[in-house]
Image 1: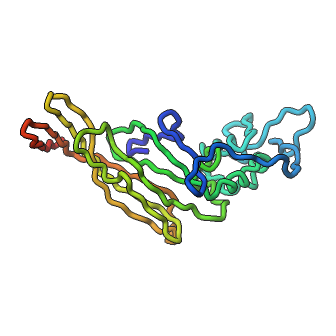
Image 2: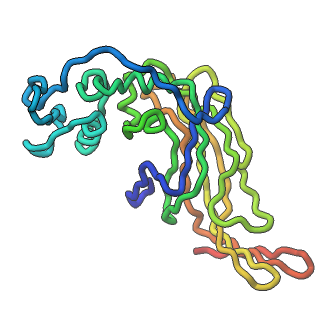
Image 3: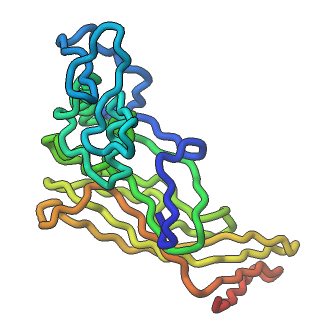
Length: 261
């Protein structure tokens, strides 16, 4: 999300995420148990249980936008809550989520990690990119506040294999490439504050590469402080008001020109 209000949720096409087990191995498939506890028929919007031959219309638990709206799945209830700006703090109290065994499915994935790679386009204004507990634990797009029913904290230990803003060019140094951080005893929020500097690189043949380089500072907010910070890894980026022009010369001396935007 950036300061202009533009948000990119659950980007699919340019970002790929792979689930990893506790040893860093890719999880190709998981064997699910067969059967389960017997539960009652779905709860109807009017309060009774679904009868044979009756059309199902589940309640949205007060988040309906109209009298005709139905929420027939845990995801639809969550979406209705999201539109209201509410947090689904206890999925066990939601009939649809109980029938889908929502909380248990989330808990079975505790201890896992993930590998994320890809690219995305952002506007040239300040914004942030973050990785936080949410959809990565379940397919229903649940938000972080909605996971508060889970008992344990989240381990945000991470390694950045590569992070860049724009096309690579000769001599560029990306300070976060290979950076890693191990979480101490308590959970919390790890923050990277990035200053992006627009850069134009011109080679000997006059070909130009429009790109960026950046500097970074880091900060960890302990989860024991109050108010408790949202667990996750956050990249807050802002663009510098200057532009760097780099020109390659035959003498192998590189000329730097700073332009104030």
